[in-house]
Image (tube, rainbow, N blue to C red; front, top):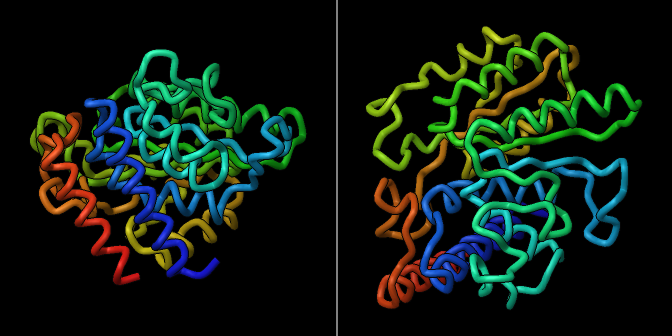
Length: 275
C-alpha cells in the first residue's frame, strides 16, 4: 500500500474517532488522534493479522497499554474489516462491544483488556515471553502514552523484557508531550525517555509519528534487532488533525458538542481533499 493510501486511511481513522466520542458524549479524542498513523501502520502494514482468522496462534499481538485511546484502535480495526462502521456509533453505549477501554471479552480481535495505565506493557511482555517458550514466531507490539511512563509498573516490565532479551517485543511511545493535567514535563517529567529505555537494555529508535516514511523505517529496523527489545519513540501532536484540539490538554478526555463536531469533521474533510 502506498503512502498516500495510508494517509487517507489515517484521516478516516480520525473521522471515526470523532464520530465515536461525539455519539458517546464521552471519551478521549486527543491521544487517539495523535496515534492515528501509528494505528494505521500497525493494522495495515506492520502486523501479521487477518480479521477472518482471529484465533490464528501465529498472528502478531497488539496491546493498547494506553487503553483510553481505544477510539483510535476501534477506528483502525473498523477500517481493516473487523466490524462495520455503523457500529462505531455504539461506542461506550450500554451493551456495546466497543467499551470505553478495550475489552477482549467483548470485541473479537482485541488481544488484551486494558485501561489501568502501566499494566498493558506487562501483558505484552508476557505474550512475548510466551512466544519464545512455545516456539512461536509472532511479534508483540504495545502502545504506551508518554504520561503513562510515570507509572512504576512500566519500568518493572521494561526491566524484565531487557533482562530476558525479548527481541520479539516492540514498545511504541506516543510522545505528544501532554497528559490530562498538562505538559508531561511539568506534571512529572519522564524525560529523557530514550536514555531510560537504554538503561533497561532496550534498542531505542525515534520516528515522526505522523510520517509514514519515518514509521516505515523505524519499524523495519525494529524487526532487524536481535538480543534486545525495541522501543520506538514517536513524536506526535495531541489532537492532530482537528484545529481546535491540537496541542490542547483539555481535549484529553472530553467529547465535542454538535458545533464542535461539525468543525472537526470539516477540518478532516479538508485534509481528505488534499490527499
